[in-house]
Length: 296
Image 1 (cartoon, rainbow, N blue to C red):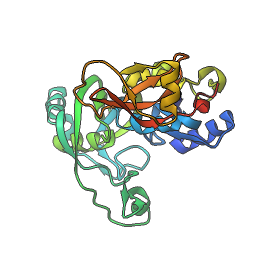
Image 2 (cartoon, rainbow, N blue to C red; image 1 turned 135 degrees about the vertical axis):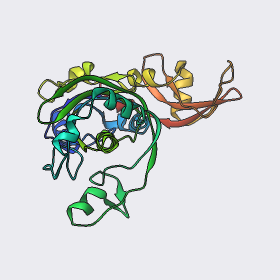
Image 3 (spheres, one colour; image 1 turned 45 degrees about the horizontal axis):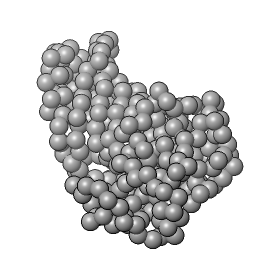
Image 4 (cartoon, rainbow, N blue to C red; image 1 turned 180 degrees about the vertical axis):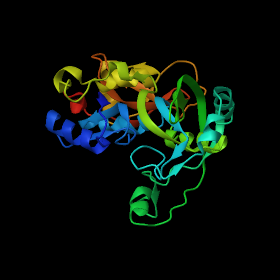
């Protein structure tokens, strides 16, 4: 796995393409798209470690965003030109207390309609492709959880810019939060800067830019990633061999609250053999990782 600090004006696929060249392999994938406007943490799997990406996509996330109140755009961000500007007097009447009050209504479990210019598929095609082809796309609302929406700074010039920290569940669209905040205040709003700072336990402070990355130096072994995500079952050498062959194992220990929850099975040498479940003392493989997945 690689922790990449994505630059602006790049797509997530651009990053994958660059890492394919750096790593000398086509088997590279990412966990969670970042729009070209956004910078920050992008998690990439290389070779066999791409099997872990499924378990990274659903992790909660944290962002730093600058929301511009007083203007709206078709894409809810600055990637498209402003098409609606609020009345200056109405914008001047929006106080910081009013902003904080409106944010309370966008915190906790909420129902959110994603921006139509998103990567969500509609009948097999990306929503943004349909919008750019001139179609009127209406996406269904989805339930998301906003666990933190904190104002860090505010600046009032022609518009009212709010710097915020947002911690949220997977599937949340920060652009939609900006749109809905502006709508609640009656002045419109959109995102002008966005940075993803955390995905689950992984922080952008530990990531490298594409210019800084050395695959040989910065590649994290799947076992190290799995230890951050799951409980660990330390295997003996023979258990490692048996599990690698798809056999079930028998272990002693307390029953777990969720017998189906993944557990990282790691061999004596520190290699991730696979993800397993344990029920009634029986270890069953969920997915195995071949020895070459660590690229060592």
